[in-house]
Length: 112
Length: 106
Image 1: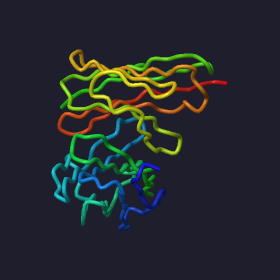
Image 2: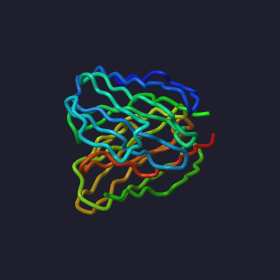
Image 3: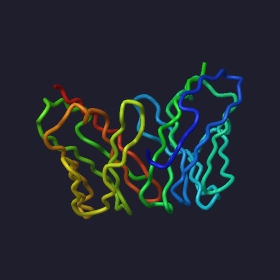
């Protein structure tokens, strides 16, 4: 248990569906992150939030839409995804940007 | 952006053997972490080690920031050590290497 919880753990969605991934941290951290891990690729940073403000968007397609309503919660809203978006999506948090990060268990997403 | 290279990409050991995993990075960094990814995908924190040496049981790590590398040592390996080991460095934000896949055979 790292103090970062992601739900759901597994998700299968069609290309026309809309779904959301949720991340919650109980560590009192101020920075939260979304990472994508595809087969045979290094983990890719998608979004960074610091004190609820988005500070980085690594050229992520608009079909991925993040939301950070407070410092403890982070969402990733998904719509009209493609099969190549199938991956493990990992959420992380840290006290501040650039300090030690802790990861959730991940959501394994399959787009059919 | 910063480049992170891990070696070897794959490593197969007999239980009880020792191993050294290496992480090279292309620029100065603010911090460095080692993670173990278990079969279910969870990244487990091993070390937060921007510089110096740390030890935790059978594992230890050394980062030489001036020479831009870090080493992870695993001694007396066990089958439960199997999985992928990632090095991640932070300059502006955290960037990961491609990982070393370790298989420990009984």
